[in-house]
Length: 167
Length: 211
Figure (tube, rainbow over the protein chains, first blue to last red):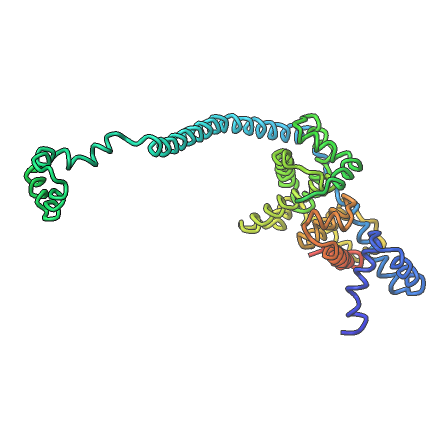
């Protein structure tokens, strides 16, 4: 590859940017100086410019009313569909709001239940806890000494009585 | 895309089409009609030379306008309106060309020859080749030759050329529409100009049409 060939892409870039008005002032001066003294460089610019100008021969579209009408109809259909989707989405939104309300209500009820249980113990719970005593109350009345009752309990004698009661 | 308040205001002030699009965002149907009328011919022109077919170009242009409408609520004035529009057009055209390349290709040259299209012009060119440098070239023929040369460029080169030539867009705006760097656009346009020169020069020298 010759030095000239290896520099060609840079020259093409530079000349293209010059033709497109994309060079800064200093680069424009440099290109114009070289154009003035280098006929090969000038020839390259002219060839690029000539083929570029040929693009003006390409036809420009003129779509007419039919295209405009069809496109606007398509957009109108899209707009109607969009409005329908918004309408359909509304009940779903309401459903979600209701569900959120229900969840909040259930959560509030759960929290209230826990607080309520701590503040006001269930009277049945006391009865359940005292059930073994209640069931054996007749037996306990026959023994007046509490220490003696505890001694009997340590010997597991009440378990037989509970077993009998259960059966 | 994050857009600063000052640049949004600048585009709004400088570009009347940005102001129209902001009205479209607020569901102003008349503004949409106005934008469409301003851009429909320009957009179809670019798309026709990009995909090589008028009917497909019109379908794609309609798709672009539909996307503009559907995206209206998300629109922010982050660039010139034309840059935003051609960003959408670039995506739509790239998708279409991708799916077309996956489908079996119809032999356009053979079809055109059968209908007396390119084949006839080709014969005219070859027959007249001896007199090429001095003969008065037929306008229609020259137009077809340039069109064929355009189709000889890569898709990206073609898009960059069309935006630069027909839309007079700067490298920075083309870069934004094609999601490239301005430096990449510079190289793309440079290669495109050189390729066009190489494709068209033989026609002027000896009547050989672009392959």
